[in-house]
Image 1 (cartoon, rainbow, N blue to C red):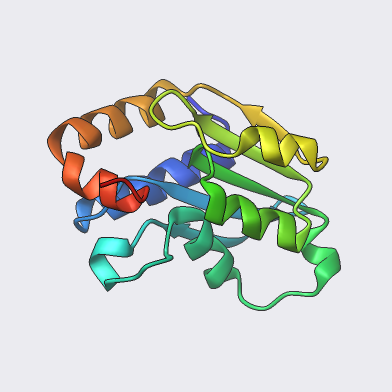
Image 2 (cartoon, rainbow, N blue to C red):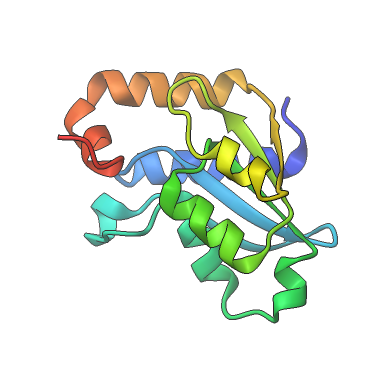
Length: 147
């Protein structure tokens, strides 16, 4: 069983899948407390930007810079360029990634800017994404900006 914060991100990914979206979930944790949680809602809300990480940040609300700088972001999938940009903008120092086999995001960029990136390689995360990509390639390609 994954550690509790990653499990919460997995639960968020399942919520996204059950509501018709891409199964990617994320939680923002500050000093051991979840302060933001979310899942990919591009399909559900017709949004251009609500990836799982962005939804978790949005749901955390406006926070002082020092809160972000003391937080950890847990995400079921390697963060894309947009989500990595938000991580860098707010100075989140650590990201725990469920898996990066189905999609390799901007982990190298994050690391080059001093962010600690831990890839757990969780089989549940990988299975959810593999199945979704197989069943819904057009939605997945749209989500990552591919034709």
